[in-house]
Each structure stands twice: as C-alpha cells, then as structure tokens.
Length: 141
Image 1 (tube, one colour):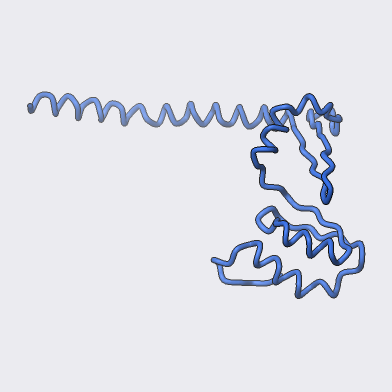
Image 2 (cartoon, rainbow, N blue to C red):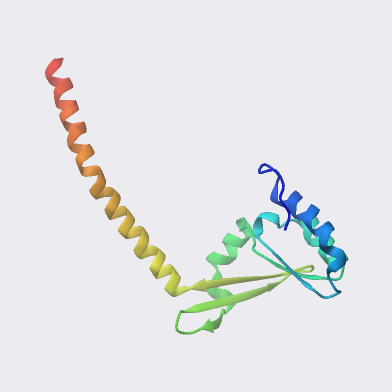
C-alpha cells in the first residue's frame, strides 16, 4: 500500500505502486485493482511482466450497445436463485465479462421508487410555503 497526495490520479498512483511491488510477484500472479486505476498503459505493464489482472471497467457507449442487446448474446445462468446471468466477450488483449442480476435490478428499482415517494412527501411542506409566498406576492401587487 502506498500513500500519495489526494489529488494524484488513480492511474498514476497505480503505476508508482506497481513498480515498487512488481519484483515480489511471480510470473502468472494475479493483480487485482479497481476501475479508477484501469488504463491501457497499466494493463500493458502488467501483461509485459507475464502477469494476469482483474479490474472493473468503466462502461462506454459500445458497452451500452452490448447491454441493450444483452439477450442476443445468449447469457449463461450464473446463479439461478438471484437471476444472475452473464456474457463473456473476447477481445484481442482482454476478456470482458458483463453480468445482470434480476434480484439486484428489482431491489434497485424498489429503492428508487421509495426514494421518489419520500422526496415527494418531503416537498409537500415546501409547496405550501411557496403557495403562501405566491399568494402574498399577488396580494401586495
């Protein structure tokens, strides 16, 4: 673990940390890092050392297209109870895995619905105040 100034980019921080620790890793070791440090340059230095890596991926427009067409990729069932299904996309220098969880999707939609209802309820007093202000302004004109 290394500590750098708070404004140092994660990709740069990863490179510095990796260079300090690379001599301790054996060929074929697995390097795991978060998506903030994920970059072409960082994955290339790992691969150049004959190591494997796993990281999160920042989704982009091409990923959005794949997600929109997810069912056409014949996703495999990963965990039936949670409704987790996934696809594997092979690329020349990497493999992307995309997963969908029906249970998580349902939970997130329910959470968002509760949050919207809560926000609507919280704004009722503000609407009354705004209405009174408008009435007062109309009276004083």
